[in-house]
Length: 313
Length: 326
Image (tube, rainbow over all chains, first blue to last red; front, side, top):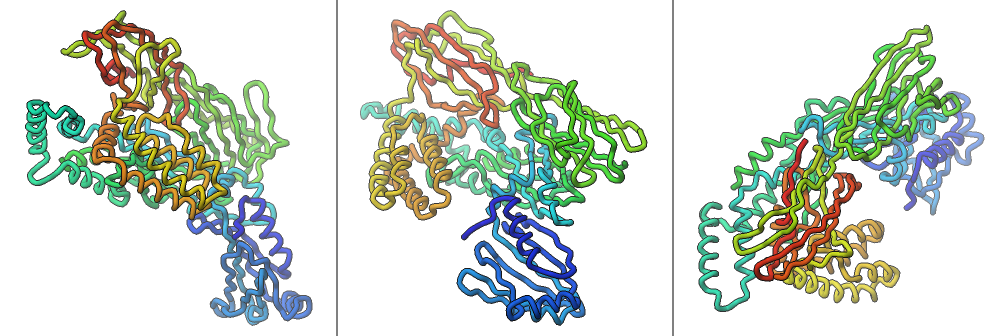
């Protein structure tokens, strides 16, 4: 499956299609970041010139496209009635054959050709974005921004260009909060458990008994019928990304929308449990020629997060 | 020109590249002049017509723009030994009718510097604990990851305790067994398998697993079948070989103990030092890196005599006391 890798390629594909379609048309390019699609869109007046071209220049009134990387082609009749035209697209080997004759019944119609994009590299070249690596001036605020790198590259030939749902990821470091919120007796418990397991002298009964006593004393603090592992698993499930969204305040997001949280960098504890070091908070924004740059910020409610962690113990 | 929006990123760590932009409505300006102080350079310019840019006298002047109402760019910064550096971006806009608009955004560029606050003549250890330790001062507010390495003239044995070493060895033997089998199934990935089978230099299993995972993620995100096979080998090795202690307790201790003080993480919290009875010289280098993984400070070289009543093995991190002053 070939994907479009950069702006130049998207433009070439779009221009190639554009040059094939005759008639009075308004064209635009749209990048849907969420779906990894680059979409060429043309709104065409099906006037006499257009119908003449379809009937006389096109073989059986059909157009051919290279099928590689094409995700979807849609033709929508906009006037006199709004409807999606179906059943006029066929695939023959590596070619897609689009029948334009049904479009002749419209006064105005829209053709949309969506290509798959190699989204990571493609988007990096289009947009410069940044988030605070760590909040410094205001201890809780993560700043976000995104701006078009190279609008002139996209402008060539297209009056409208839109980058939709561009993702900007902030890495929220939660490890510090966790370390500070987990009570000291828990750390002590790890050490005692470790010492018990580490004891290799079969005659060290007194030491072992002391350690066991200490362990029982510390376990009592955890609560009845709870083991250390259970408690840690409770912590681990508390740290679910969807729950973490509750600790993100979106009051200053401005041009951005909060999309989701993901566990980012993991501290692996080998299948038994996993504690995240950082949470990735993904926000999205739209960029166009009219709005080529975007800014915003979110607040990480770290106090509340720390308090809620402490409540688990 | 109206509704001018001037943006310069905030919370800047020294060494980082930061974006700025100007948006406006209405007529295009005659020129936009940018002067930066404290920043290193403008490394990217967005939407400016290149033939119409003048650089000189410490300022950059822009006269023409591709799409209307937008000028953007990226500034680079230097890593210095000053925890706070003042920086500003000054913009002078001259509109078509000659009106001048001045805009300024001021920022601090942050880093953390490590200083040796107190180095005792000798570090002595007995049953009641350590007498005197090396005191290190952190200047600045950014998060820092400290790593400790041995210098050439170091005579004290610095290593991870035998039981951790054993656990890594056991785990890596299980991996070798699994990877050898993969060699037959995936002959086109031989080179990487061999690379991963090299002896590890890591000090914890967590680090070892992370290295393997990272390498595979980067190299083989496109060969899903191979990636899945590797993940299976990894998890079989983990669940089959590691004990409860290796799987759960030790990683937890590492997670919670690597944080020595606020905003400081130790890269290798399990390093221990063997202090001989007759004493010897400990020579180590302490380096710090910022949250972006860049070296953020000049490394400290420390040489000190260590001595104990009886030969003892103690956590290396206990020898240091780390404080932060802002």
